[in-house]
Amino acid sequence: MTEYYNETRNHHKYLVVKAKGGMGNRMLCAITGIIYGQLTARKTIVDWRDESYSNDGSNAFPRFFLCSSVYPETVITNDTTVRPNIWNNKLNKSISNIIQTYDPKKHSSILIHRKYSVDVRKLEYEENILVFWYYTHRIGLLRRHLRDPNYGYAGLSTAQIIRKVLQEELKLQNDIRQRILDFKAKNWQQTVIGLHIRHTDLRTNLARYERPLRRFLERSPDAAIFLATDNQHVSEDYHRRFKKVFSTPKWFPDGMSTMHQNPICPDKVANGIESLVDMYLLAECDYLIYSSSSTFSWISRLLSNIPSENTADIERFNPKVRLKRLLREWVA
Image 1 (cartoon, helix red, strand yellow):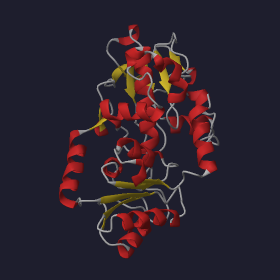
Image 2 (cartoon, one colour):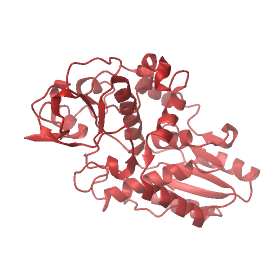
Image 3 (cartoon, helix red, strand yellow):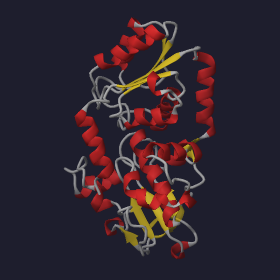
Image 4 (cartoon, one colour):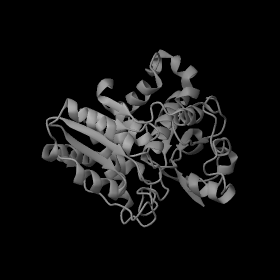
C-alpha cells in the first residue's frame, strides 16, 4: 500500500495537517500547521481529503488556497516512521474516519486530539512524519516558540498572528478571488452592513441580530445589508422584512440540516467556494454583525479593517461561549 508524500523519501521530514469541521475550523487548524511547519523546518502538507468539501475524495485544500508554505503531496511507500503511531498505514484516512473507527462516541471530546495529534508545544520529534489536527487554532500553545523575532510573530496577539498568516500565506485561489471582486462590482452599495447568521447546527437567538442591525441602520439609514446565512428560512425572512438585502447565490439544505458536510450536497467543492466567498465578502463590509461562537464569523472579523464601533458580536458577553473558546484554545 502507498500513501501520498514526496519523492525524496525518508531523509526529509514532514508535517501532515488533517481537518475536521467546517471551513472556519479547518482554516484555523491549517494556520497552526503552517506555523508549526515553519518552527520545525518540516515540509507541511495540508490534507483535506475528507468528504466535507471534496466530491471525489481528492485533497480539496489546493482547490481553495494558494499557499507557498504548503508542500504539494505526491506518493511514496509507507515504510517510514509516523507519530502518533496510530496513523501508521492510515495516512490516507481522514481524522473523522479514524475517530469513527476507534472512538465513535468521542467526536466532540475536548481531549480526543491527544490520541491523534502531536503536541505542538514540543518541536523536536524523531519521526519522519508528524500528524497534527485540532478543532481550532493552537496559537496559545505555540506562544513561547513565537517569541523568536526571526519568525515575524514576536509581540503579536493571537488575532494578529492569525490575520498575518491569512493575509500572507493562506491566499485564495485566483478564480475565487475574482468571483468576490465580480460580486462586489455588481452588487456592492456605498455603505454595507454585513450580517452572518448561522442557524442550522449552531442555532442562535435571531432577536440578538436585529438589535444591532436596527442600531446600525439608524446610524446609516441608506445602508444595504449583505446577508450570509446557512438557513433558507432566515434568508427569506430578512429579504421580506428589510430593504436593500442582498446575498450570494448558494445551495441550501432542506429543513434544519447543516449546509456544510451534508451528504446530499450536490457539489461539495462549490459549497466550499460559496462559503469562502461569503466569508471574505463579510470582511469587506462597513459594519459587521456576527457571533464569535462561529469560527467562520470570527475569521471574517479578523480579515476585516472594520472599526470596533462598527461591529457587534452577539455572543460577546455570553460566559458559556467565552469559556468554551478558552478551553478549546488552551487545553493541552
